[in-house]
Length: 192
Image (cartoon, rainbow, N blue to C red; front, top):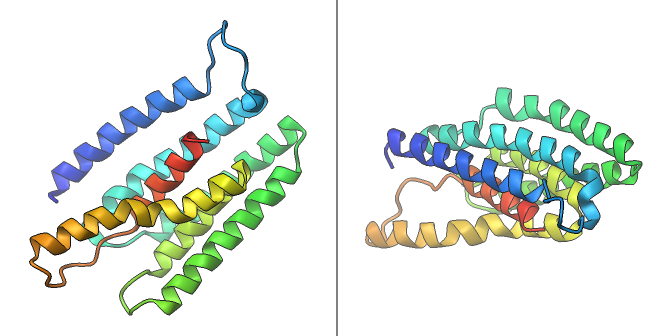
């Protein structure tokens, strides 16, 4: 995939995601408010922050097969602060604990996959990103967390099959998992 194509697709993804977030978290005056309406502004800020991380890491992972620490690790304190404010603002401090447990559990699951998989498979960048995505998914509950765990592999599988088919079964360059991890988590959060 050319770099201009990946930048363009990230830009389109940005526009679509921004539209989805604005529609999901701003119910109309005539609509009955959903149960999560009290957390909508906080959720909007969290998802928007992750979206900014998403676009940057998608482009870098597609180009270089690296998820830079300065982007991924710097997103942790920002997301934790947003989740902390949301927990205090909504009067639901237990959700912050769920988010932290979700982050540790998803990072742990990816550590296990990285250790069990072949060399050159999952890297530490994927593990660090998994912890960040687990924080966000854990905030929204177990179903969203499980979806964020499984969805990246379901999204990547057809792409991997097509890549193998195009290479006539010969191994090609590794498929970056970061964009699929981000897409899977965002789909899980938006689909809740």
